[in-house]
Structure formats: structure tokens, C-alpha cells
Length: 433
Image (cartoon, rainbow, N blue to C red):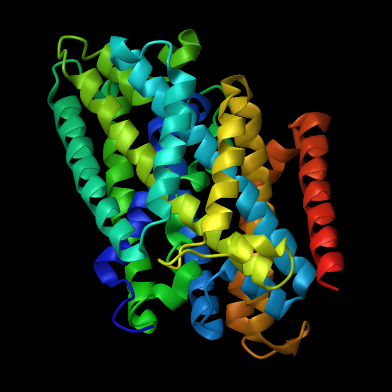
């Protein structure tokens, strides 16, 4: 990529903005409920897992040198069917995350500002449309807008944490007993899948390798810097919040489990009347930046699949900014449809987590294949392959308990999602033939 590509700062901005969003401002409350103060461990373990996974994806991106990596890597290493199912799961998970984020843009604004009361769904739709329009701009312009929002977001997060730590009601006693939550002493294990979602965008830059200047330097370096910034901000927000609300509070107030920072601002720090508005604005900025990055990555993945004939050809169309315009319109329409049903939030989150882990396992299998000499059991780089196998094993250990307890409905929804994808792929391939 020439000088028109994005540099290190924009790469770091994409990673940080893509990560800091719906998870820390909403799903973090669920991890607090499951594990109590021990959720801090969950978030650190999740960062380590996603960091290793991100390093593997970065290596694949440099090996193939192609954007749309979520499709290209498995398709080249394992076969087109694997590329399709990895990409399809990635697209589904991202659209769910966009819809979930849009719903909570409306939620945060409606609970903090009376002018927006009762407008949760219209606000959700407007936020999706806004991000879709920004996705149609030149990637450098989109990156600049993203960095501006990110700086404002980081400032608001730091301001909240300083206010929370310095408030008279903050107490480390609320972190004791440390291993105490709805899921018992090992609740921190149950909370890891939710925390993993918060780091999903560490691979965002690797998936657009053709748009990155000096990719051999900027992709791994941005991964390291971006993940470090995200972990520091996450831990700061978590600990400062846990000093004000604990598991017992979330158990007694289930409506606050998806808005924990607002809950702390509203209850324990209620004397600081401006703080709920600050945290709501921070959450909205975080959610919008996540929607912006995930929307672009989703559209790029769809375009890559369409170019290879795995999706209808019209999805390969781009505008004069080289933005995948047709794919952007499709993801926006589907996201808008899902955001019309806020009551489906918990089911969508669980479905998104399940298809995400399937996608990640397929991508790691691609990494293992690349590290081999061309045959599955003729290993050229045993250490690289071992890292891949260990990553898969750890991920399964974290996800399997939740998957097994999900009930037949989750399996049915998952099967339906992949069945729809298979039908679309069959139609696209048949038409191309």
C-alpha cells in the first residue's frame, strides 16, 4: 500500500476504538454479576487470549498480504468452505454487536436525558445510519473522525475513573469477598467469554492489511500498543466501579446489570449530578466508535467473499472512495431490523459469542496449517503449531460450560444462522457457475 494507507496512530486508533464499546459499558456489568470483584481476572485472561489470537492473525495477514483476511486466511489455508463459514460467523457476530451497541446508545441517552425518553429505537436506527454513512467515506477521513471520538472518549473515561476513585463512598471493602458472584467461586471462568468480546477488534488492522502503510512494522506494533491501552482503560473503569457497586447490588437491581457505570454514578455517587450524564456520553461515544469500526470490517469481509463468488456479486461493488458501499447498505439494513427488538438482546449476545468462537477456531486452524509444511501432521514449526492448539484448547475450556448450558434454543438458532449462510453461498456459487 502506498502513502494513501493508514499509519501507526490510525491503526492504534482503530484497535482501541473497536474494542472500547458495548462490552466495557454494558457487558462488564454481567461479568461483575457472574464473578463479583474476581471479574478483573476474567478481563486480564481474556486480554491474554485475544492477544495471542491477534498475534496469530497478524502473522497470517503478513503471510498472505490480503485484506478481507477473515475469509482469505481459511480459504487459502484450508479451503473455500472454511473461509466461508469463518467469514459468515464473523459477519453475523459483528452485525449482532452493531445492533446491540445501537440499542444501548438509545438506552444510555434515554436514561440520562429526559428529552430522549421513549426514543430508544429511533436513536438506535439513527446511530446505525450515521455510522454507515461514515463508512462510505475515504478510510483516512473515517480514521480521523474515529480518532477525534476516541480522544474524547478516553478523556471521559479518565474523568469518570478519577471521580469514582476520589469519591467519599468509594471503598475497597466492596471487593471483598473477592470470589463472590452469581456463578460462585469460579464465576470468573464463566465471565471470560463476555470479556473476550471486549477485545474482539484487536484483529481489525490485520484484516485490512492492504490499507496499512509499512504493515510488517505497523500491524504487530499497533496490536501491542492498542491492547496495552485498552487493558489499562478497562481495569481502571472496572476497579473504580467495583468500589461503588458489588454483586449484591446487581443481584437486587437486575435492570442495572447492563449499565454498571451509570448504576454507580446514579446510586453511590448520586450527589455528583453531572456524572451520570458524563458516563452516558462516554458510553455513547464508545458504542459509536465500535459500530463504526465493526461496520467497516463487516463490509470489507462481505466484499471479499463476493469477489471470490461466495456471496452475491453485487456485494463486491465499491464507491469512488473504495468503500464497499453495497455491503455497507446490507449490514446497515440487517442491523436496523435487529435493533427493532431490544428484548432479544441477551439471546443475540449469546449467539454472537458462540459464532465468534467458531470463527476464531477456524482462523487459528488456518494459522496451524500455515505453520505446518503443507500436511496436517508434517509439522515444520512445532512451537507455532503448539501455540495454536493451546489457544483453541483454552478457548474451548472457557466457552464450553456456557455453550452446554445454553439449551436447545441456542443450538437451533446457531444451526439456522449457518444454514441460511450455506443457502446464500450455494445460490451465489450456482449463479456464478
